Image (cartoon, rainbow, N blue to C red; front, side, top):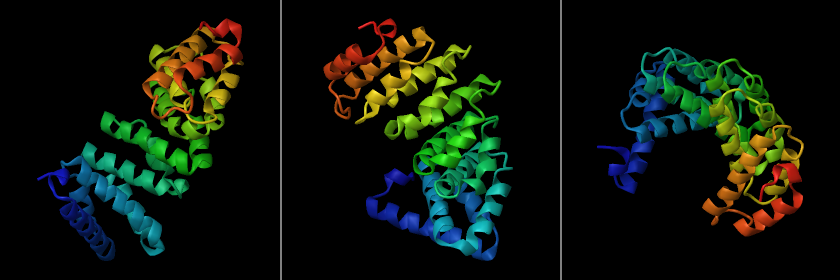
Length: 258
């Protein structure tokens, strides 16, 4: 029976059970229950396990070294589900202590399985939002990596911080404006749209785009920004017509095709 086949009360009990069994592993210095839950077929049971791992790391200094030792051992597993859960657990830890888990992401970026690489993207998002300075500094070194998928993953991963603080990631995104791979440029356009629709963000994004040299890409980004204001009309600070009016007035004429 899957996690969400259970009632709310049963789910709460299961999470408490996971927490208790992970604690027992930590006390006994054995990772059998970590392996059991990290390899579960149900995504949400694995999620409960990595969330509880993050909580245990945060509240108990005495278990931190043991948790990191377990994560190191588990990351050598042949199971992509276990490696994915290790990355997600590391992401929970990295929201407050990135230096202790940085190496997992350096390895996870190059993992053979997309499940693990996607976990890296998701973890960069949540860590970058909560602990931006070390996470963005780390991500910056991979922005111009020879592997196009690494560049794309990093571009996507820093998006969440940009939704509230676009000024933090726009200088990084600028490095990708002339990327030779269309898949990377398309991700860049997507991210520019995603960081444009909250309060105060459109102004910051348009001001930055006015200085970019790749006019063709910027024009596509503006089209995406306008589209996002329509698609996310219930969440956007500006109505779409207001966004169009602002862009029409403030974007440089050579990039403004409204």
